[in-house]
Image (cartoon, rainbow, N blue to C red; front, top):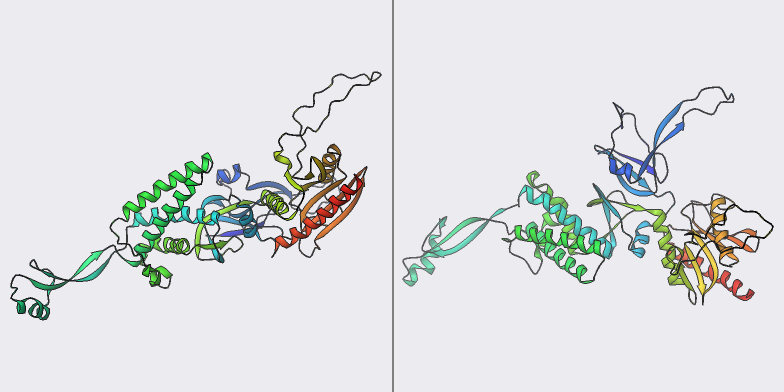
Length: 459
Protein backbone atom coordinates (compact mmCIF):
# COMPACT_ATOMS: atom_id res chain seq x y z
CA UNK A 1 0.00 0.00 0.00
CA UNK A 2 1.61 3.33 -1.04
CA UNK A 3 1.84 5.77 1.86
CA UNK A 4 2.68 9.44 1.39
CA UNK A 5 3.72 11.77 4.21
CA UNK A 6 2.80 15.20 5.50
CA UNK A 7 2.80 17.29 8.67
CA UNK A 8 -0.33 18.85 10.10
CA UNK A 9 -1.55 21.67 7.86
CA UNK A 10 1.31 20.84 5.49
CA UNK A 11 1.37 19.82 1.84
CA UNK A 12 0.89 16.11 1.10
CA UNK A 13 3.89 14.69 -0.75
CA UNK A 14 1.96 13.25 -3.70
CA UNK A 15 3.81 11.46 -6.49
CA UNK A 16 2.94 11.81 -10.18
CA UNK A 17 -0.06 9.64 -11.01
CA UNK A 18 -1.15 9.14 -7.38
CA UNK A 19 -4.50 10.86 -7.91
CA UNK A 20 -5.10 11.10 -11.61
CA UNK A 21 -7.95 13.15 -13.04
CA UNK A 22 -10.30 11.53 -15.55
CA UNK A 23 -13.74 13.12 -15.62
CA UNK A 24 -13.08 14.20 -12.06
CA UNK A 25 -10.92 13.33 -9.11
CA UNK A 26 -12.19 10.43 -7.00
CA UNK A 27 -11.44 10.41 -3.27
CA UNK A 28 -13.07 9.01 -0.16
CA UNK A 29 -15.97 11.29 0.62
CA UNK A 30 -15.73 10.83 4.41
CA UNK A 31 -12.13 12.09 4.37
CA UNK A 32 -13.15 15.27 2.55
CA UNK A 33 -16.41 15.74 4.45
CA UNK A 34 -14.75 15.49 7.86
CA UNK A 35 -12.02 17.93 6.88
CA UNK A 36 -9.02 15.61 7.24
CA UNK A 37 -7.52 17.02 4.04
CA UNK A 38 -8.33 19.87 1.65
CA UNK A 39 -7.42 21.01 -1.83
CA UNK A 40 -5.93 24.48 -2.27
CA UNK A 41 -4.95 26.60 -5.23
CA UNK A 42 -1.22 27.37 -5.10
CA UNK A 43 0.81 29.56 -7.42
CA UNK A 44 3.47 27.28 -8.85
CA UNK A 45 5.76 29.99 -10.28
CA UNK A 46 7.62 32.74 -8.51
CA UNK A 47 5.58 35.93 -8.33
CA UNK A 48 6.72 37.99 -11.34
CA UNK A 49 7.65 41.64 -11.09
CA UNK A 50 5.15 42.58 -13.78
CA UNK A 51 1.57 42.62 -12.54
CA UNK A 52 0.26 41.67 -15.99
CA UNK A 53 2.45 38.58 -16.40
CA UNK A 54 0.63 35.24 -16.11
CA UNK A 55 1.47 32.57 -13.55
CA UNK A 56 0.69 28.88 -13.25
CA UNK A 57 -1.85 27.92 -10.59
CA UNK A 58 -1.85 24.34 -9.32
CA UNK A 59 -4.23 22.41 -7.11
CA UNK A 60 -2.37 20.83 -4.22
CA UNK A 61 -3.52 18.61 -1.37
CA UNK A 62 -2.92 19.74 2.22
CA UNK A 63 -3.42 17.93 5.53
CA UNK A 64 -5.54 19.55 8.23
CA UNK A 65 -5.38 19.31 12.03
CA UNK A 66 -5.54 15.50 12.39
CA UNK A 67 -2.61 13.13 12.79
CA UNK A 68 -2.65 9.48 11.76
CA UNK A 69 -2.93 7.36 8.63
CA UNK A 70 -5.63 8.82 6.37
CA UNK A 71 -6.95 6.85 3.34
CA UNK A 72 -7.28 8.94 0.19
CA UNK A 73 -8.32 6.67 -2.67
CA UNK A 74 -7.88 2.98 -3.44
CA UNK A 75 -4.79 1.78 -1.59
CA UNK A 76 -3.27 5.26 -1.37
CA UNK A 77 -2.97 6.80 2.11
CA UNK A 78 -1.18 9.72 3.73
CA UNK A 79 0.58 9.51 7.10
CA UNK A 80 0.09 12.86 8.84
CA UNK A 81 2.59 13.51 11.64
CA UNK A 82 2.61 16.20 14.38
CA UNK A 83 4.12 19.49 13.25
CA UNK A 84 5.81 19.98 16.64
CA UNK A 85 7.83 17.43 18.64
CA UNK A 86 5.27 15.84 20.97
CA UNK A 87 4.74 12.72 23.08
CA UNK A 88 1.24 12.16 21.73
CA UNK A 89 0.70 8.80 23.44
CA UNK A 90 1.37 10.33 26.86
CA UNK A 91 -1.07 13.18 26.28
CA UNK A 92 -3.79 10.76 25.16
CA UNK A 93 -3.16 8.62 28.25
CA UNK A 94 -3.55 11.66 30.51
CA UNK A 95 -6.74 12.86 28.82
CA UNK A 96 -8.22 9.45 27.88
CA UNK A 97 -8.87 11.33 24.67
CA UNK A 98 -11.17 9.65 22.12
CA UNK A 99 -9.47 8.74 18.86
CA UNK A 100 -11.45 8.47 15.64
CA UNK A 101 -10.93 5.03 14.07
CA UNK A 102 -11.04 4.53 10.30
CA UNK A 103 -11.34 1.25 8.39
CA UNK A 104 -7.69 1.20 7.32
CA UNK A 105 -5.12 -0.93 9.11
CA UNK A 106 -2.00 0.67 10.51
CA UNK A 107 0.80 -1.07 12.38
CA UNK A 108 1.63 0.29 15.82
CA UNK A 109 4.64 -0.56 17.97
CA UNK A 110 4.08 -2.16 21.35
CA UNK A 111 4.97 -0.05 24.38
CA UNK A 112 6.76 -1.37 27.48
CA UNK A 113 4.11 0.14 29.76
CA UNK A 114 0.84 -1.62 30.55
CA UNK A 115 -2.14 -0.70 28.38
CA UNK A 116 -4.35 2.19 29.46
CA UNK A 117 -8.14 1.80 29.53
CA UNK A 118 -8.64 3.50 26.16
CA UNK A 119 -6.01 1.19 24.66
CA UNK A 120 -7.83 -1.88 25.96
CA UNK A 121 -11.08 -0.56 24.47
CA UNK A 122 -9.33 -0.21 21.12
CA UNK A 123 -7.66 -3.63 21.34
CA UNK A 124 -10.93 -5.35 22.24
CA UNK A 125 -12.77 -3.70 19.34
CA UNK A 126 -10.09 -4.55 16.78
CA UNK A 127 -9.64 -8.08 18.09
CA UNK A 128 -13.34 -8.84 17.78
CA UNK A 129 -13.39 -7.27 14.30
CA UNK A 130 -10.42 -9.40 13.26
CA UNK A 131 -12.24 -12.52 14.47
CA UNK A 132 -14.94 -11.93 11.86
CA UNK A 133 -12.44 -12.32 9.02
CA UNK A 134 -10.77 -15.26 10.78
CA UNK A 135 -14.02 -17.18 11.23
CA UNK A 136 -14.95 -16.56 7.58
CA UNK A 137 -11.72 -18.42 6.64
CA UNK A 138 -12.56 -21.20 9.07
CA UNK A 139 -10.90 -22.37 12.27
CA UNK A 140 -7.57 -24.12 12.02
CA UNK A 141 -7.81 -27.78 13.00
CA UNK A 142 -5.16 -30.44 13.48
CA UNK A 143 -5.01 -34.20 13.96
CA UNK A 144 -4.10 -35.40 17.44
CA UNK A 145 -3.22 -38.95 18.43
CA UNK A 146 -5.72 -40.62 20.77
CA UNK A 147 -5.27 -43.88 22.71
CA UNK A 148 -8.25 -45.82 24.10
CA UNK A 149 -9.56 -49.23 25.18
CA UNK A 150 -12.81 -50.07 23.38
CA UNK A 151 -15.07 -52.86 22.16
CA UNK A 152 -15.65 -51.00 18.87
CA UNK A 153 -12.14 -50.60 17.53
CA UNK A 154 -11.05 -48.09 14.89
CA UNK A 155 -7.68 -47.01 13.71
CA UNK A 156 -4.79 -49.22 14.77
CA UNK A 157 -5.05 -52.12 17.25
CA UNK A 158 -2.21 -52.08 19.75
CA UNK A 159 -1.41 -55.77 20.14
CA UNK A 160 1.06 -55.51 23.04
CA UNK A 161 -1.10 -53.32 25.32
CA UNK A 162 -4.15 -55.44 24.43
CA UNK A 163 -2.42 -58.64 25.60
CA UNK A 164 -0.97 -56.97 28.74
CA UNK A 165 -4.06 -55.06 29.85
CA UNK A 166 -7.01 -56.97 28.40
CA UNK A 167 -6.27 -60.62 27.51
CA UNK A 168 -4.14 -61.23 30.63
CA UNK A 169 -7.17 -60.27 32.72
CA UNK A 170 -9.52 -62.50 30.75
CA UNK A 171 -11.18 -59.59 28.91
CA UNK A 172 -11.83 -60.80 25.38
CA UNK A 173 -14.32 -58.15 24.23
CA UNK A 174 -12.08 -55.06 24.44
CA UNK A 175 -8.87 -54.04 22.70
CA UNK A 176 -6.43 -51.14 23.03
CA UNK A 177 -6.31 -48.91 19.98
CA UNK A 178 -4.72 -45.70 18.72
CA UNK A 179 -6.17 -43.31 16.15
CA UNK A 180 -5.91 -39.71 14.97
CA UNK A 181 -8.78 -37.34 15.64
CA UNK A 182 -9.39 -33.98 13.98
CA UNK A 183 -9.87 -31.33 16.68
CA UNK A 184 -10.29 -27.58 17.09
CA UNK A 185 -8.54 -27.64 20.47
CA UNK A 186 -5.22 -26.21 19.32
CA UNK A 187 -2.96 -23.68 21.03
CA UNK A 188 -3.86 -20.82 18.62
CA UNK A 189 -7.57 -21.51 19.05
CA UNK A 190 -7.21 -21.67 22.83
CA UNK A 191 -5.52 -18.24 22.72
CA UNK A 192 -8.44 -16.86 20.69
CA UNK A 193 -10.93 -18.40 23.13
CA UNK A 194 -9.18 -16.92 26.17
CA UNK A 195 -8.97 -13.46 24.54
CA UNK A 196 -12.66 -13.58 23.56
CA UNK A 197 -13.67 -14.55 27.09
CA UNK A 198 -11.54 -11.74 28.51
CA UNK A 199 -13.06 -9.28 26.03
CA UNK A 200 -16.55 -10.23 27.19
CA UNK A 201 -15.56 -9.71 30.82
CA UNK A 202 -14.03 -6.33 29.95
CA UNK A 203 -17.16 -5.18 28.13
CA UNK A 204 -19.34 -6.23 31.07
CA UNK A 205 -17.08 -4.27 33.41
CA UNK A 206 -17.31 -1.19 31.19
CA UNK A 207 -21.10 -1.46 31.10
CA UNK A 208 -21.24 -1.63 34.90
CA UNK A 209 -19.32 1.66 35.07
CA UNK A 210 -22.46 3.42 33.72
CA UNK A 211 -21.02 5.08 30.60
CA UNK A 212 -22.90 7.65 28.50
CA UNK A 213 -25.75 6.75 26.19
CA UNK A 214 -23.69 6.49 22.98
CA UNK A 215 -20.89 4.51 24.66
CA UNK A 216 -23.41 2.19 26.32
CA UNK A 217 -25.03 1.48 22.95
CA UNK A 218 -21.64 0.79 21.38
CA UNK A 219 -20.59 -1.52 24.24
CA UNK A 220 -23.79 -3.54 23.97
CA UNK A 221 -23.36 -4.06 20.23
CA UNK A 222 -19.73 -5.07 20.76
CA UNK A 223 -20.74 -7.44 23.55
CA UNK A 224 -23.21 -9.17 21.24
CA UNK A 225 -20.40 -9.73 18.77
CA UNK A 226 -18.21 -11.24 21.50
CA UNK A 227 -21.02 -13.64 22.43
CA UNK A 228 -21.35 -14.70 18.76
CA UNK A 229 -17.63 -15.41 18.59
CA UNK A 230 -17.78 -17.47 21.79
CA UNK A 231 -20.51 -19.58 20.21
CA UNK A 232 -18.30 -20.20 17.18
CA UNK A 233 -15.48 -21.32 19.53
CA UNK A 234 -17.69 -23.55 21.68
CA UNK A 235 -15.97 -26.83 20.74
CA UNK A 236 -12.55 -25.66 21.90
CA UNK A 237 -11.38 -26.86 25.31
CA UNK A 238 -10.04 -24.02 27.44
CA UNK A 239 -6.65 -24.02 29.12
CA UNK A 240 -6.81 -22.25 32.50
CA UNK A 241 -3.02 -22.53 32.89
CA UNK A 242 -2.50 -20.75 29.57
CA UNK A 243 0.15 -23.14 28.31
CA UNK A 244 -0.87 -22.05 24.81
CA UNK A 245 1.08 -18.81 25.36
CA UNK A 246 4.32 -20.75 24.71
CA UNK A 247 3.17 -22.07 21.34
CA UNK A 248 5.33 -20.82 18.41
CA UNK A 249 2.23 -19.92 16.37
CA UNK A 250 0.85 -17.85 19.24
CA UNK A 251 4.18 -16.11 19.93
CA UNK A 252 4.59 -15.25 16.24
CA UNK A 253 7.73 -17.39 15.89
CA UNK A 254 6.17 -19.58 13.20
CA UNK A 255 4.24 -18.46 10.14
CA UNK A 256 0.63 -19.49 9.80
CA UNK A 257 -0.48 -21.42 6.69
CA UNK A 258 -1.56 -19.12 3.86
CA UNK A 259 -5.09 -20.49 4.02
CA UNK A 260 -5.29 -19.24 7.63
CA UNK A 261 -3.60 -15.88 7.11
CA UNK A 262 -6.13 -13.99 9.30
CA UNK A 263 -4.78 -15.82 12.36
CA UNK A 264 -1.60 -13.71 12.37
CA UNK A 265 -3.36 -10.43 13.15
CA UNK A 266 -5.89 -11.96 15.56
CA UNK A 267 -3.23 -13.78 17.56
CA UNK A 268 -1.12 -10.61 17.91
CA UNK A 269 -4.12 -8.76 19.28
CA UNK A 270 -5.11 -11.72 21.50
CA UNK A 271 -1.66 -11.84 23.10
CA UNK A 272 -1.68 -8.06 23.58
CA UNK A 273 -5.03 -8.32 25.38
CA UNK A 274 -4.07 -11.27 27.57
CA UNK A 275 -0.79 -9.60 28.57
CA UNK A 276 -2.35 -6.08 28.78
CA UNK A 277 0.22 -4.68 26.37
CA UNK A 278 0.05 -1.03 25.45
CA UNK A 279 1.08 0.56 22.17
CA UNK A 280 2.53 3.86 21.06
CA UNK A 281 0.95 6.30 18.63
CA UNK A 282 4.26 7.81 17.50
CA UNK A 283 5.71 4.83 15.62
CA UNK A 284 4.54 3.98 12.10
CA UNK A 285 5.94 0.44 12.25
CA UNK A 286 5.16 -2.38 14.66
CA UNK A 287 3.51 -5.72 15.24
CA UNK A 288 -0.02 -4.62 16.19
CA UNK A 289 -2.30 -4.10 13.19
CA UNK A 290 -5.08 -1.77 14.39
CA UNK A 291 -7.63 0.43 12.71
CA UNK A 292 -5.89 3.71 12.03
CA UNK A 293 -6.48 6.17 14.86
CA UNK A 294 -6.85 9.86 14.04
CA UNK A 295 -6.37 12.57 16.66
CA UNK A 296 -7.25 16.25 16.65
CA UNK A 297 -4.07 17.66 18.17
CA UNK A 298 -5.59 21.13 18.68
CA UNK A 299 -8.23 19.75 21.03
CA UNK A 300 -5.87 17.23 22.61
CA UNK A 301 -3.26 19.89 23.48
CA UNK A 302 -5.89 22.14 25.04
CA UNK A 303 -7.37 19.36 27.19
CA UNK A 304 -3.94 18.09 28.24
CA UNK A 305 -2.80 21.53 29.42
CA UNK A 306 -6.05 22.10 31.30
CA UNK A 307 -5.96 18.73 33.09
CA UNK A 308 -2.35 19.00 34.11
CA UNK A 309 -2.74 22.56 35.39
CA UNK A 310 -5.64 21.40 37.57
CA UNK A 311 -3.31 18.81 39.02
CA UNK A 312 -0.23 21.00 39.48
CA UNK A 313 -1.75 24.33 40.65
CA UNK A 314 -2.81 24.31 44.30
CA UNK A 315 -5.03 26.76 46.14
CA UNK A 316 -6.61 28.09 42.93
CA UNK A 317 -9.40 26.93 40.64
CA UNK A 318 -8.56 26.01 37.05
CA UNK A 319 -11.78 26.41 35.05
CA UNK A 320 -12.74 25.54 31.50
CA UNK A 321 -13.99 28.81 30.06
CA UNK A 322 -15.82 26.94 27.31
CA UNK A 323 -18.05 25.24 29.88
CA UNK A 324 -18.84 27.88 32.51
CA UNK A 325 -22.00 27.57 34.55
CA UNK A 326 -23.44 30.14 34.79
CA UNK A 327 -22.15 31.59 31.54
CA UNK A 328 -20.55 35.03 31.48
CA UNK A 329 -21.75 37.51 28.87
CA UNK A 330 -19.28 39.43 26.75
CA UNK A 331 -21.36 42.61 26.71
CA UNK A 332 -22.84 44.53 29.63
CA UNK A 333 -25.86 46.73 29.17
CA UNK A 334 -25.02 50.35 28.36
CA UNK A 335 -27.08 53.53 28.45
CA UNK A 336 -27.25 55.70 25.35
CA UNK A 337 -25.93 59.21 26.04
CA UNK A 338 -28.68 61.80 25.68
CA UNK A 339 -26.80 63.80 23.05
CA UNK A 340 -25.83 60.81 20.84
CA UNK A 341 -28.28 59.67 18.14
CA UNK A 342 -28.45 55.86 17.59
CA UNK A 343 -30.41 53.75 15.14
CA UNK A 344 -30.76 50.78 17.47
CA UNK A 345 -29.60 49.57 20.88
CA UNK A 346 -28.70 45.90 20.66
CA UNK A 347 -29.31 43.41 23.43
CA UNK A 348 -26.23 41.68 24.92
CA UNK A 349 -27.31 38.53 23.06
CA UNK A 350 -25.62 35.15 23.32
CA UNK A 351 -22.05 36.46 23.06
CA UNK A 352 -20.09 34.86 25.87
CA UNK A 353 -16.66 35.07 27.41
CA UNK A 354 -15.05 31.70 26.56
CA UNK A 355 -11.32 31.59 27.33
CA UNK A 356 -9.84 28.10 27.34
CA UNK A 357 -8.57 28.44 30.92
CA UNK A 358 -9.53 30.68 33.85
CA UNK A 359 -7.49 30.79 37.07
CA UNK A 360 -9.76 31.93 39.89
CA UNK A 361 -10.25 31.95 43.63
CA UNK A 362 -13.44 32.86 45.52
CA UNK A 363 -15.03 34.23 42.36
CA UNK A 364 -12.07 36.50 41.55
CA UNK A 365 -10.32 35.98 38.19
CA UNK A 366 -6.53 36.20 38.48
CA UNK A 367 -5.45 35.01 35.03
CA UNK A 368 -7.05 34.35 31.64
CA UNK A 369 -5.36 31.94 29.22
CA UNK A 370 -6.01 30.68 25.72
CA UNK A 371 -4.33 27.52 24.44
CA UNK A 372 -3.12 27.77 20.84
CA UNK A 373 -1.67 24.72 19.10
CA UNK A 374 0.50 27.03 17.04
CA UNK A 375 4.11 27.77 17.80
CA UNK A 376 5.35 31.35 18.06
CA UNK A 377 8.16 31.56 15.53
CA UNK A 378 9.62 34.71 17.04
CA UNK A 379 8.45 37.70 18.97
CA UNK A 380 4.76 38.13 19.76
CA UNK A 381 1.95 35.64 19.43
CA UNK A 382 -0.60 35.93 16.63
CA UNK A 383 -2.34 39.31 16.69
CA UNK A 384 -5.81 37.74 16.69
CA UNK A 385 -4.89 35.52 19.68
CA UNK A 386 -3.63 38.54 21.63
CA UNK A 387 -6.74 40.61 20.89
CA UNK A 388 -8.98 37.74 21.96
CA UNK A 389 -7.32 37.04 25.29
CA UNK A 390 -6.99 40.76 26.13
CA UNK A 391 -10.72 41.23 25.49
CA UNK A 392 -11.49 38.37 27.88
CA UNK A 393 -9.15 39.77 30.55
CA UNK A 394 -10.64 43.25 30.30
CA UNK A 395 -14.18 41.90 30.57
CA UNK A 396 -13.32 39.80 33.64
CA UNK A 397 -11.45 42.65 35.36
CA UNK A 398 -8.19 40.72 35.22
CA UNK A 399 -4.73 42.21 34.57
CA UNK A 400 -2.87 39.03 33.51
CA UNK A 401 -3.52 37.50 30.05
CA UNK A 402 -1.62 34.48 28.73
CA UNK A 403 -1.44 32.51 25.48
CA UNK A 404 -0.01 28.98 25.67
CA UNK A 405 1.90 27.50 22.72
CA UNK A 406 3.88 24.33 21.94
CA UNK A 407 7.61 24.68 21.45
CA UNK A 408 8.98 24.21 17.98
CA UNK A 409 12.36 22.58 17.44
CA UNK A 410 15.37 24.45 18.84
CA UNK A 411 13.08 26.87 20.69
CA UNK A 412 13.57 27.63 24.38
CA UNK A 413 10.49 26.90 26.53
CA UNK A 414 9.34 29.33 29.18
CA UNK A 415 7.44 32.54 29.94
CA UNK A 416 7.69 35.53 27.58
CA UNK A 417 6.35 39.04 28.24
CA UNK A 418 4.87 40.84 25.24
CA UNK A 419 3.95 44.07 27.01
CA UNK A 420 0.90 45.86 28.34
CA UNK A 421 -2.39 46.69 26.63
CA UNK A 422 -4.10 49.23 28.84
CA UNK A 423 -4.21 47.64 32.29
CA UNK A 424 -3.66 44.12 30.98
CA UNK A 425 -0.19 42.54 30.93
CA UNK A 426 0.13 40.17 27.95
CA UNK A 427 2.26 37.01 28.30
CA UNK A 428 2.95 33.90 26.28
CA UNK A 429 4.23 30.54 27.48
CA UNK A 430 6.06 28.11 25.23
CA UNK A 431 5.80 24.57 26.61
CA UNK A 432 7.85 21.61 25.41
CA UNK A 433 5.73 18.56 24.52
CA UNK A 434 8.57 16.27 23.50
CA UNK A 435 10.02 13.59 25.80
CA UNK A 436 8.55 14.69 29.16
CA UNK A 437 5.66 17.11 28.61
CA UNK A 438 4.61 16.85 32.28
CA UNK A 439 7.85 18.52 33.36
CA UNK A 440 7.18 21.40 30.96
CA UNK A 441 3.64 21.90 32.27
CA UNK A 442 4.88 21.78 35.87
CA UNK A 443 7.23 24.67 35.10
CA UNK A 444 4.33 26.52 33.48
CA UNK A 445 2.14 25.92 36.54
CA UNK A 446 4.79 27.52 38.77
CA UNK A 447 4.97 30.52 36.43
CA UNK A 448 1.18 30.91 36.46
CA UNK A 449 1.11 30.74 40.26
CA UNK A 450 3.71 33.53 40.37
CA UNK A 451 1.57 35.67 38.05
CA UNK A 452 -1.50 35.06 40.20
CA UNK A 453 0.43 36.14 43.29
CA UNK A 454 1.15 39.43 41.53
CA UNK A 455 -2.57 39.91 40.96
CA UNK A 456 -3.39 39.01 44.57
CA UNK A 457 -0.82 41.45 45.95
CA UNK A 458 -2.41 44.23 43.87
CA UNK A 459 -5.86 43.64 45.42
